[in-house]
Length: 229
Image (cartoon, rainbow, N blue to C red; front, side, top):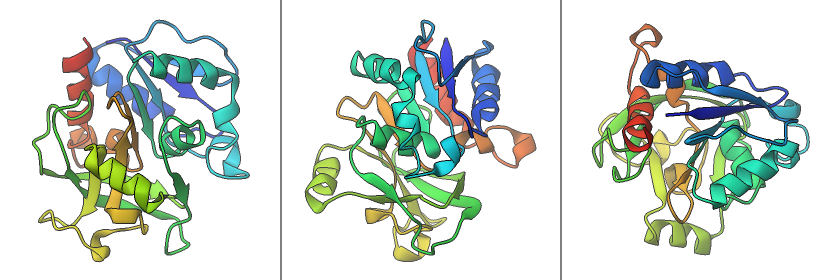
């Protein structure tokens, strides 16, 4: 599986994503600078977490207009899988590849801790190594992590099976108490129409190795390898 990780000024999880990808595939991904206009042949493109351009204006708003994003959008629309993690999810919404917006956390505070997520479906390139309804533990680290969309958009996402993960408690119960940032309907991640683009606020790469105190995130990268190798 050949992967490319896009690096923006302010990215801080690009190397983490690259390490997780190389660990599962044995192939070091290309690190592509935001100012480049080309991306090498890739089975997967990753927009990593961080604070691109210092999160000025809106989180991801400036990064969405980087030169490399024209190629990311083109590849995504041609069917290349794209994974946007945290800031990457914000960039995907700003670039128009996913609906909705990411707003300030309901607490108005930066939140950095592990959370539980419920896997809503396991028949995509990103989730084959999970089971439907499985509760996993990922990490979050954001201040603008509250997913918002109009009711009609939320209903469409629900009806089309495009909600990927929801915040839940350890038993899988969806509740306000288990929602760390006020995301509508506890949404932690969504797909595009073809389910080839995934935007996800929690970080799978931060819990992808026993040394990091958990391996639930490794299942996502193993799923991608199985599908794309």
